[in-house]
Amino acid sequence: MNVFYRLLLTASFFAASLSQADTLWLKNGDKISGAMVTVNEESLIWRHDSLGELLVKLEDVKGVDSDTRFDVAEKNSPRLYDCRFFVLNHVQLLDCSQYKLSLVEFADVSGAVAAAADGPPAPVATSHKGFISVSVEKSSGNTTELDINVSFEERLRFIDTRHTIDGEYRLETIDETDQQQRRSLGYKYDHFLTPQWYFTANGNVSDDEFKDIRSRYAGGAGFGYQFLENEFVELSMEGGLNYVSEDYIVAIDEDRNRPAFRWAADYRWYVEGRGNGLEFFYNHEYLISLRQASDWEFNANTGMSYPITGKISASLSLSYDYDGDPPETKEAQDAVWLLGLDYNW
Image (cartoon, rainbow, N blue to C red; front, side, top):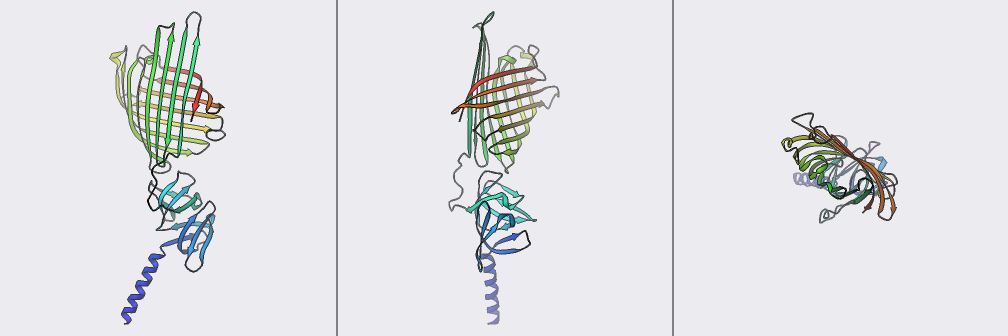
């Protein structure tokens, strides 16, 4: 009988340990067993078997170990789903359906509720932003010149992915007979491995009579880092490998096909918050051939836009291109100032 009761007592303690798997560590050194119920912007609700529900300020929490899955709002990332809180080497970690991440402070959690029984919801865009920009210039005198420039961008940001589609069409007509045009269409896919690090893949197809390019294809992959992404500032940088193929119209003997290292940056400053006022922007792409150091390209676009009425805004931008190894018939650099109207959504 004594052996039986000892086994029963041991099993009871083991079952109790399984039912109270959650542990709360406080910054003052206290350790409390029980279960985490929910988290809001300022406090955590903790259920203790003897003391009932406790309200604990987030600023006093050092870490939580919990077998319960939660949907989490975290200050520096999109909403996270099906997350488990655990502590490893005194660091608070989250293991979520999208990725794992560490928290500098538990107070970085601004909300947590029990995960939905049917799992994470179907992907829904957490942000959707785009524009179409049109600028027209016409001059007359000794020559009649008409310049038309149309560009667009569409960005969809999901929980752990981002899709960007962009394009441009530029037409220059002199005396109604001499025409040159540029057409470009690109797509970029970003998959976030953490709230900051992401895998990126890009592709672009274009032609450009201003640069004697009959056709140009570029594509590749790499990694990026999202330094900032909030209502006021967005900043990211990317690095990776691309393959670039160019066929020329006149200088056909100078066609170029080469692997290249790609470095890109994108910066946006929404002075009064996204969609609410003056916006400054800057982005660039730098490509350097892995075969010849003198064969490099730098493309940058910078400017500002300001809303006029509704979804219409005025924009001023500078587009600058530099080719370190251009065809003999063309200049190395090309700069275009544009004053236009944008339709935003």
